Amino acid sequence: MYRIKTFNKISPMGLNRLEPEHYTYSDNETDENGILVRSAKLHDYPFPASLLAIARAGVGVNNIPIDRCSESGIAVFNTPGANANAVKELVLCAMLIGSRDVDGGIQWVRQQVESGVDITTVVEKGKSAFVGPELFKKTLGVIGLGAIGSLVANVALDMGMDVYGYDPFLSVDAALRLDRHIHVVKDINELYKRADYITIHIHYTEKTAHMIDEKAISAMKRGVRFINLARGEIVDDDAMLAALDTGRVATYVTDFPNNRLVGAPHVVAMPHLGASTPESEQNCAIMAVDQLKDYLENGNIRNSVNFPSVSMERSGVMRMCIIHKNVPAMLANITTLLSKDGVNVENLSNKSKGDYAYTMVDLGSKVADDVIEDVKHLPNVIRVRVIE
Image 1: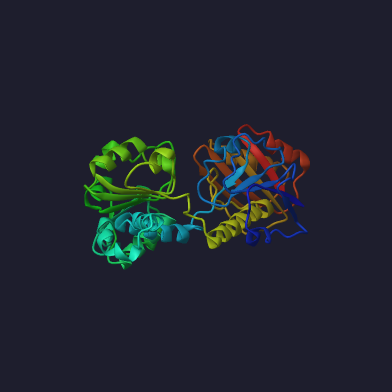
Image 2 (image 1 turned 135 degrees about the vertical axis):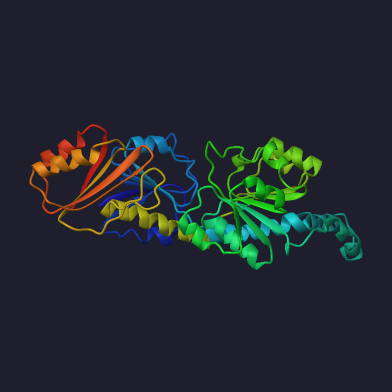
């Protein structure tokens, strides 16, 4: 029986996949084996020794102490792509409201009515203040061509836009999702100088913090409309506000409001609506639960942010899962210990990611407890788990 602790509200569509004969789940579980979380901050949460994995029903994991998890042998999963359609649709909305000043027009209409004016008498004259360009035949720059960015790029092409994309880490799978008419550039400045609209879809890391700074903005086309549905910290607020004052940036649409931005002209600030749809919440919950279950029951890792992806069909009578440092001779040391017990290795997979590696071994017979203990005490081994 696995115990799952929930933080935040997790969609029942996901929770219902936790069979009651194998799982208990609630927000007050103790000595939990797994955690399901959305936005709750876990940095100060004391992890029990029993905790094996954390699944984030969403993409960003800045609310989870990744380094502490890795050092403790706790796998951390996220759900890339599960909310991609929801964010894609909001990008389209952001381009339109950033271009046509729909928000300003709606507020103006309400102000006229509240002041006692017959709105029908002033609409035709007043609307000129909210005129903006069409998207058709304009150029969109997409920074980050993953699950979300590729969808945005393709749909913008369908709307008659010219699309430039930039992603220094473009995967083969992502490249195959892109329409062949999208211009993928290797120099981000090529995108900056051409784009009438720019939208970013990258992770927030130390390297991407304030990536959109004064230098980046100065390389952009004058009057660009910039959309940030990724993370607020990727954009330097000081540089963006200065660019809005000079007209270098015509409009800044952000899903990450703060008091400075909300009070500034030409800023459209939304309350983090990117993935706020019932469908997105359901998709994220289902994906998070499925990944958590597969790891707990089979040791398979999919979409982990701290450990490599490793998946094998079950064979043999016992599976040993070993999280260890990514150092030489680990695999040889592990198999040497197993061979001493005369156990046949039926299948094995070993992969690394950064400083860490993961080894799964399917064995033809059960391993003695003392051999398992020997593996646990090997230098650079972090965690050993046996699944029968």
